[in-house]
Length: 490
Image 1 (cartoon, one colour):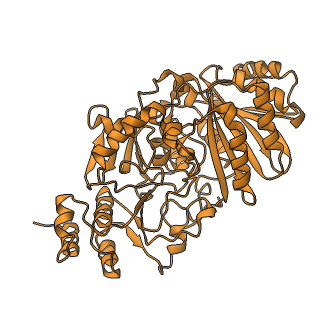
Image 2 (tube, one colour):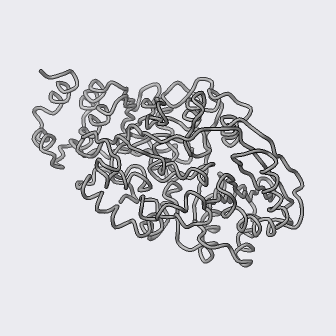
Image 3 (cartoon, rainbow, N blue to C red):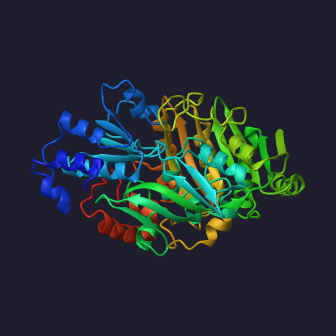
């Protein structure tokens, strides 16, 4: 007996030259799809296919970065199940339609959209917990992951941007606000379900498809398949201490020198960042979170102040519930969880949402050695340049560094901190390009795949280091026909 989904798929394929190829696994593709073919795809999904001309098309095609608003996909499929994803990939194989996977839509290069078929997993956003393990749908936004795990008194190490999708974060590694204590997001991943290029749904772990599981922990999203679900090991939550210290710009060199010596070697329970901002004038801030009480945090902060040689002009140190601390880090301290979303009625959005999209460019480095005096001077000169931009330094070390560089696909285990150059709107691309180039002699060629950069040369080495060769082997095994073709695809 054939079910509705299979009947629709076979009916759509029948009578075309692609029929035998679709079932034999070959890459044979017929002419491009006709409107009737798109309609057949939509009818075969439990989710919803949105096409140009539909009322919700403009909302559906927009990703977080407004710089990519000119991209017009031929279709956006809001998949409800792994079987829906498989349907979409069969359609892409049959017609040779470019396919792009999308979770939160935060790809810095705009590679969570494209001119072909966008496979959006936002509808698969459930979060459940049992016995120390969290099962999270690939479309879940971080703000919802934190909020839904909070009643159980647990969480996972993850990032601070509330509308980032858990899939992209995890697949690229996952630097976050408690990484020094609990590791990267990918370090607590126990298994994942992923639909590969041939349409099969695989459950990958240390013992099942271990090579694909290895590649899915830092190899970058969109390379090997479309992830639909993740199972993570959780950690218990407790009250934490938040801190934000601001110094005048005249102390920026002293703060940066002190921070880079203090932050990566601090106790694992302390995570911090150093933000060098120009908006509207230069400013330096050290912020972070301590998994412990205020007195112990104050003692650690005093060691930083002693290194700087002068106290901050403003100082905020306060105890917070863990889930509220994540809202503060997300910039949503005065909002509800519902409000801490993009507004809208599509999956991944919320009618009460208040977060607006941005238009920006970004680049990255990893620092494997502390900046010299010359390096500090060069970086501060870039921040002081006219414009609206930031350099964000996030401390690593701790649990991140105790994992071997080849144990997962994420290779940057020995880095002291990550570096992100981030600029808004007018002149953004020129500033990020200039800042990155100016700091390359000081940081070297190391970059974070989750801050994907289309202008990088030698990007394989910069993202993946010595792990690049093994990743290529996994790609050849699971996507030999290269259905998934990112501009910087493995």
